Length: 254
Image (cartoon, rainbow, N blue to C red; front, side, top):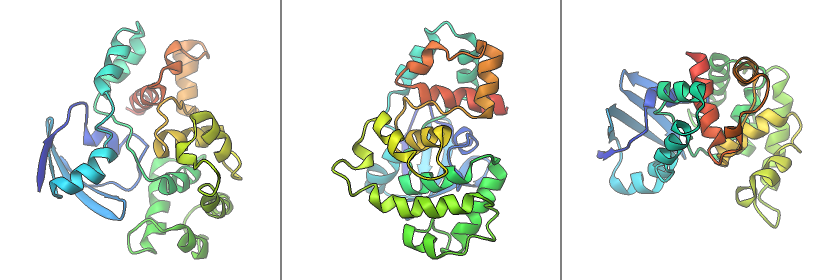
């Protein structure tokens, strides 16, 4: 067991923000999180978190995963000084949101599944896929050999197979995708059949931690049209644009 204090973090808000699909709620304040081949039980009491791991595992796996190194107070200050009342309201509603540092492979497949889909169906499909892999997220070769026809994927099945074929190649270039700029990484991701602008932005944001990525789905389009006259507000050019997107996205789902 390890206990630590983290500000600007709310487990419930993160779990329901649409960026992660395998968290399991154990009780009101506790979640079980599978990631990196491990499983963590984490409970929250205000800014105090109790974790089912030792300090070494926390430092090397879960502290980076929860993005403890990013200055969320700076992001808060930018919002409060922006003069944008809608963004302020959204932030105050979901100020415990964080952009998790998830595994690229899992994010890649998860957000291909997310195309024209809703969160309950996405979770159900991913649960079925993981069920054939002992509860773990399957690796590339395992996924290629898996029968996906009964996983509720529809047309996305062929795109997942394409992504699995592409994935190994993304590490074989002179510069791995993890070391590319946001623009270069997005361009490379859009070479995958079935990965368009929004999905590529989601993968860059949630799988590569490019916080400047600003995914635009139907919810965000509705917000832009209703609140900003169909235009992109100035803060979408911020280095925290993807985090701000999460605040308004989560606020819209309320």
